[in-house]
Length: 248
Image (cartoon, rainbow, N blue to C red; front, side, top):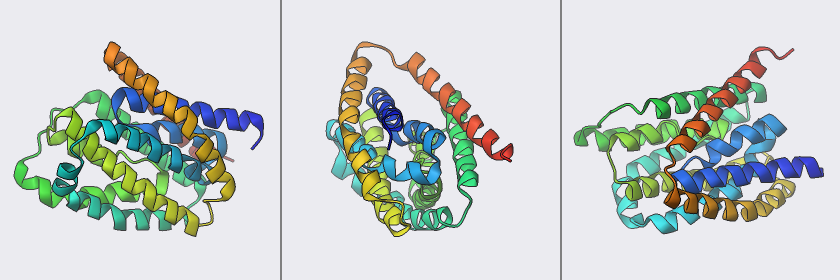
């Protein structure tokens, strides 16, 4: 990787880690859009894994409630696995530009949902039966695009969890997805030693980005920053879709 490309990757890691530290989520979704625009979908996915896991673990350590979340949401996490396998299979069979356009649609859907903040409450009786379905669909989208937030984000938000339990529950899903993605991308021949090296270097900006985001969260209200991040993600999603629609 030439110095400019490496600088783009490291800047994307730092930016996404800052978002992660500030909001508790969004590393993969914030990072993958920049990496796909710079390198393409197949090249970007393996660059994402190690920094994503590192940022997840840093946030999970501070959130607590790990055992409680694992016991409560195991059907959700179990449903992730077949969805990821199917999504990775589709990744190996669809055009990369089509996959990038699907990612663009996911980014726009996520941004619109998060900006709208719909006041949806999920009845307790529906939590358990919808868990595996949500996990499967989240894994499917993740396997094809690298984005880990839909539809697990609205599912967990609708359960009205307190912030610490919400952050822990969703980051367990993120971490599981990332670890399975390592195996899947290796089988597809995309997880090369070159990608692993760049990803490992990315731990450094991730560490400082998460710490800075966490400190900022304690001092400032993240609402305006959150709005700007979501608006930017929507624009990036539109660009990815446009590139597919208007490619020669």
